Image 1 (tube, rainbow, N blue to C red):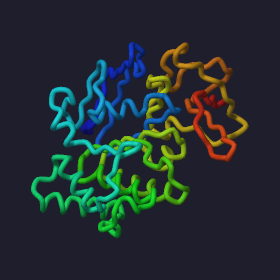
Image 2: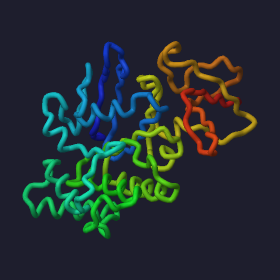
Image 3: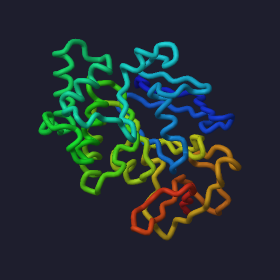
Image 4: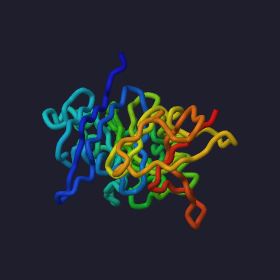
Length: 288
């Protein structure tokens, strides 16, 4: 039986009387890499902050490696590595000093020798061993992202949360970080927050689609991603969740002779030509 390392049940959060996360539930199994996908403002970062223990949910249950985050907070947090979208670093610290500091904070690395060994191992895994003696303030954006990833995995937590791990990187740096995440996913359970479709395609085995604070679809990449364009496919717009309720794979569709329906987020281009995920979700209907 596959072990569930991350379980969320009925998670909700309100700000000023307005509910922004609305009863989200999902499970991530050991060895899976899942992408939490949705447009900006969908609630991805809010969910990550609750998973990391930085924000208390209004209601709902979070279990990490079998530990309830509310009742066994210390054990749950020791099982979790978190890379925030915009992590705070101390520019005057060297990479090694910073990773040792994060190892101490994690509670997973007892003793000074244990913290030093964990810091150096994380640096090797994330390919930043060559800048261990460099101050963080002089590193490039790409190196800083890898250092933040090293800080998340120091001490080998079984579950990793990566919030927008390629945000602000140039195309070459994006490829480097994606390859690194794919490498780490071979031995860890990972959930990535992103609004970039290609990121989920590149590194994830599963996807969770979030819209307006609701989880509207989940499944494997092969179940959720659209098939190649062909003459036998048409597109039908899915109504917003607020009016249509939860979406479900394989739901009935009024299009005649439909044999399969697939849900996905529409893609459009910015003026610079970059692809972005809009707030509209669509059903691709494959005709027989």
